[in-house]
Length: 167
Image (cartoon, rainbow, N blue to C red; front, side, top):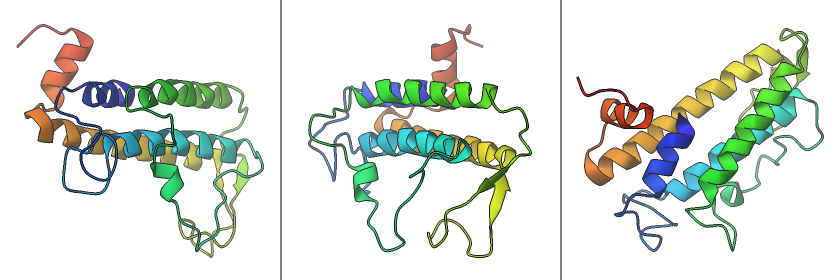
């Protein structure tokens, strides 16, 4: 669903790549839809790598900027960024299918601002539920972008996306 939302916003005729702080910024806020999509795909891959114990997952020094996580790189386009989100979620689906015990422990990186200092680890289940929460939050941000452009709200968007009959 989140991929449908971001693709709909990215394709909207009123989203201008040159407006605001980044490609497709439909509001005065710094965050653009392109930055949101890039961040959402990075979160998906980062949390999945975290559960799979891949080195470098979600690693960043506490005082290190996260601007590159949001800002599209040269050559990345608003139209192309949603295409990266699908494969990122596919990687998560594959990883979850391979986890025999969602209660398995997952160690957490130390000294980063988004993990409390007193936490040593979470279960894979907790991490995956957190990823669902993050994705839902990003989908809500995409809803705000879309509604600010043309007033579209969740139910008309879902009706169109799912080809439901009008009530």
